[in-house]
View 1 (spheres, rainbow, N blue to C red):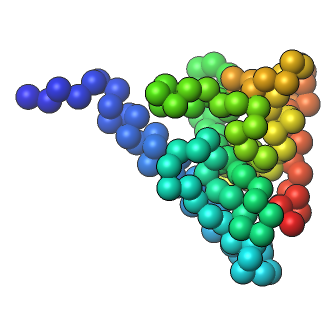
View 2 (cartoon, rainbow, N blue to C red):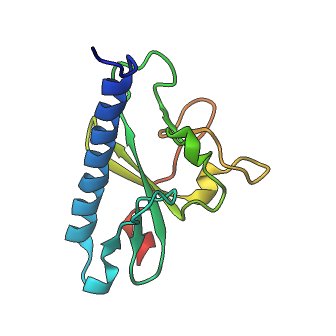
View 3 (cartoon, rainbow, N blue to C red):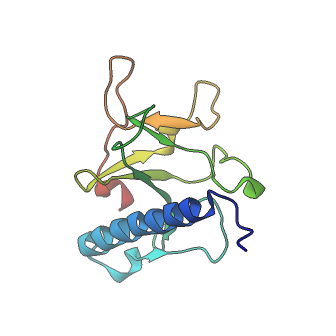
Length: 146
């Protein structure tokens, strides 16, 4: 008899897909760098970020964006941690958010200020692309990592 929650397999699949997006970003990033001290480091424990650039200590959080099949918020990526034991993200959790849009393998690089509300607290989600209500994330490109 299986005692796992009904959504356990979906949660595991989501983690695998999230890791694939992290690795996609890392592959593109490592193809872009021109010096080995720019390599990405991964934390051994969940620190609220996925990579740190060795040279300058910039922290990067990668999120997967898949609008296909969504019933609501088709333009948003969640900024909430999925494992509740670690709590919500804080306003200093990372320096840059990278969103992997799987529909076109686009990588959107945004600084943390784009993820904060007017009070300086982390939003629960952000729009990836412009809408009638807002400009969406502004893609700063990989140059911000130098």
